[in-house]
Image 1 (tube, helix red, strand yellow):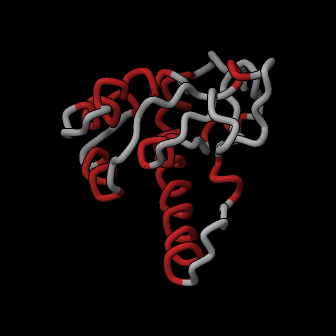
Image 2: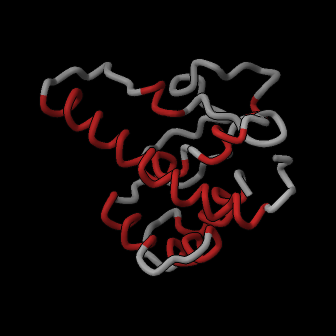
Image 3: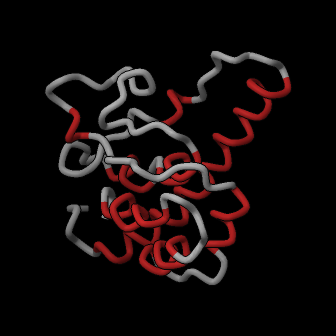
Length: 144
């Protein structure tokens, strides 16, 4: 499917699939970093290697995004090589610009409640009090 073909449906699917991607990451991190004390543990590179369109054309990677992780972590994978080993001087525009951080997983879940679309989820997240909530629109726009 081309990126612009049925974009609204793909956006909504992305919302559905980005949430479990983030929850899976949260559980893995809680288990290995917190419970077992493995401070260097990273699950799937913390999903910081996922590229945005047009640099990523694989629909699977455009629907399973790092969106939830990006709302939680304090890493901007388009500028910080310490959290994105795939970043180079020539490819920073391939990764989402992530200026959102410190949301709690239950706040992200709250934002999903009642959301029927990608845009509705975004709008719900903007209404949750967070020092970086003004950057939510930019974060969501990285993907669609």
